[in-house]
Length: 281
Image 1 (tube, rainbow, N blue to C red):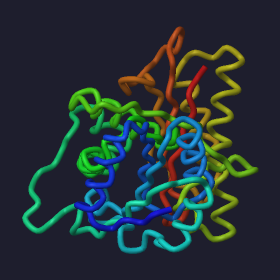
Image 2: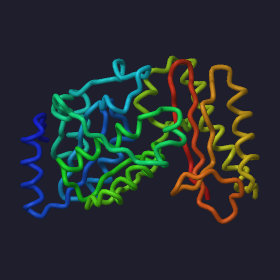
Image 3: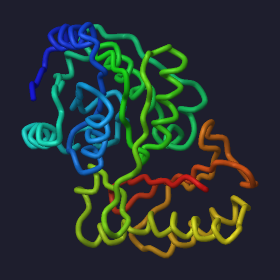
């Protein structure tokens, strides 16, 4: 695996790869890799000729009181995992390679970016859309692999690709979970043992919603309240939101009959904010 840190060198490399008619798969990450990230790499390896990953902790998607400075970073370990899983090229730029002095151009996606995570983290998706626009121009990938755990992000990025006419396909890979159901996340390492046990409340709440849906419940508010009760019973959990929306346009639903439904949530366990979701049916 070749590691590139210079944006100009990297773009020259990807231009050559495209000229050679390779099908390029791209896995953008912020590092602190876990099995969920590696599942994206494996999917890319199976579907494309050349696999490119990036590791970049993107400052523009963090709010002023969020965890940018303490976000876990270990590029050496990340590189070892990516190489072992089949990545051909790793782009690991410094911040000034992505945002040089005088940078003043940002990408905003209206409406889809303003609900759920966007409401709780203003400006977050502006940062996501901006950095991915830059990376897509540098890589020019054919397929981009993203995780279902970040469900709203996948919807936003699909809209970005559609509206700005990027010639790539967004491939969404299922959420990877620990044995007790907790969605794999780089932020899980913030949790102490007590918080780690409490964090299972997210999956328990989602599982309860799935059970009720499977039993015939189609009233969205009944599902929400059942989930809220489970979260409220966990002393270390503080609910940010539980939302039941259309899976494509993220509009709030009340009657779930005949709909493809995204149930998403954000919960703080101690000082750590975790997200998770399921799609029904």
